[in-house]
Length: 237
Ligand code: TMP
Ligand code: ASP
Image (spheres, rainbow, N blue to C red):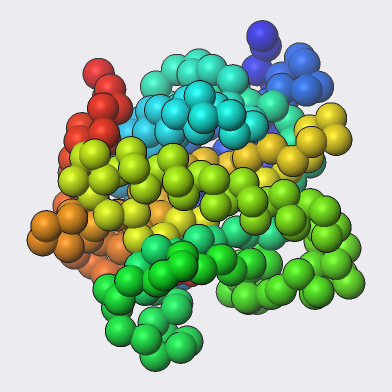
């Protein structure tokens, strides 16, 4: 497969065309952003760590029967994916209260959410990814009711697979964000799953081992990502 022109540069990844219109190359950069891109920093090894981490998780999800865009690793910082028609909607499942839920609803950080809760956000940095609902998504054509139902079901299935995977590594999957697209008429998981887009706490100490270390200036960001990877069996060699 031949790598062609850059199509799009996001905050942490760049997307390249290939000679196959159905395939893209994702390049994971070292760039790290928070607060909708207002804080940007380059963190050594991040591109490689997140590329390997994402490949491992996408493999586990595919094994569990969840359709994903991931095809294969291409290099330390690149992978080949299916060319999805992305939907501008972010799907979040929360098992434990943290982040914007704590800020907007005033619940205590760390309280268990039973049952886990599901939220939709619009992918729009300028508007700071506002929370939306099914009705707004349908009205504005961001996704159809059928697509929304499928994304919600898949996001909860991911929870069952990953909660257990992380629990086996002594970790709590606090919350995570997924993005989906359409490939040949089917809803397929896109984007990435890495500690950039989820919250992971040590199950015993509740130490934060995800991008909150960057958001909150706690340091040791990539070391924490590597620690999480090591505990669940990701190879970074
Ligand atoms: P929140 O608490 O900021 O709403 O985020 C919930 C989870 O989703 C958290 O793990 C971070 C992730 N997330 C992103 O990675 N990018 C985003 O743009 C949003 C809104 C959430
Ligand atoms: N991913 C978003 C950003 O980079 C939100 C965040 O992670 O804080 O700005």
